[in-house]
Length: 347
Image (cartoon, rainbow, N blue to C red; front, side, top):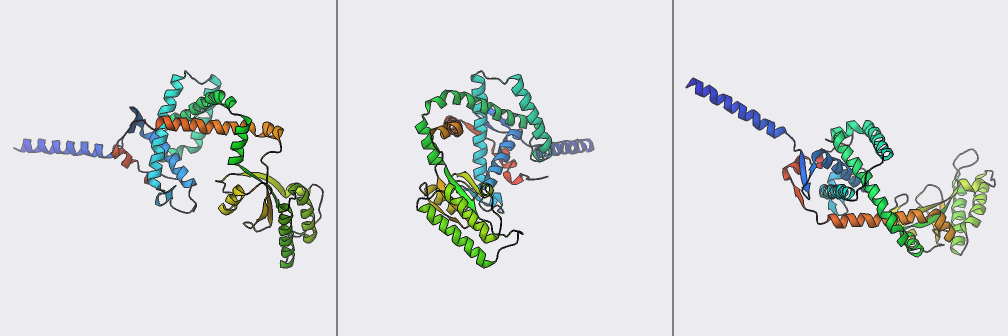
């Protein structure tokens, strides 16, 4: 009896240890896509990437990511959807790269290895803290390189099909260019100006905006206005001064360098429209200008970039369309185990 009882206790203890081991063993595979396993480390890398993407979309940068909504969807759901989409893209890229018979040259592979070594050395602690090992990070990184090579092949066959008229239309529908002039608000000793001087500068800015809206050019009227501003400030003006206070830049509807109201106003405005931006502590006069001066300017400075953008978007759409029907089988327990709530942003 005693021997049987003792043997029973040993069996119970062994069973308990076995159950404990199962309890604390994390899943090695989180899901399959088209029958291909997505290992935990790769899944966690894509999840971390999605989490970072969600964070970048927060309007309130102090808000907690997982307590927010991203594009109208609860953050955790959005992150999961993006993670699954990335896993599907991974499977597509690996398959397409192999089917196309593509490989990396020795130089390309050496460059990939070198860059990977550098990134891993700088981020190993953070990646490891998030369950991402070097081998799965390599899978992630090499997949991105394979995507770029597939994209380059696609672009070689598609870029020549896009006419200049189509490229210009895309540029004008996507970008808005502004020329700005910022007026100084300090004197020759860098001291703040008194209120009456600031009022003069504001009136000067408003007058310039009116003149620009009446058909004037910033290139012509900007330097004249700046010289008057320097007189008000008691500062010395030189011929090359304007280059430090005037600039040109491109905006898109998603630009965040200015207030959303300003950006949307510029996007909707006609070329030539001008105004005074009130989002700075100094007067800034702006005028919407043409995206390019002429055909030569477009061809020399913008065409290559625009063609790349158009074909990149088309290739991305192609991948998304082809992966939409991919069969995905998730391990619900594994997904729960690797919840984004466990993501660490720092170590």
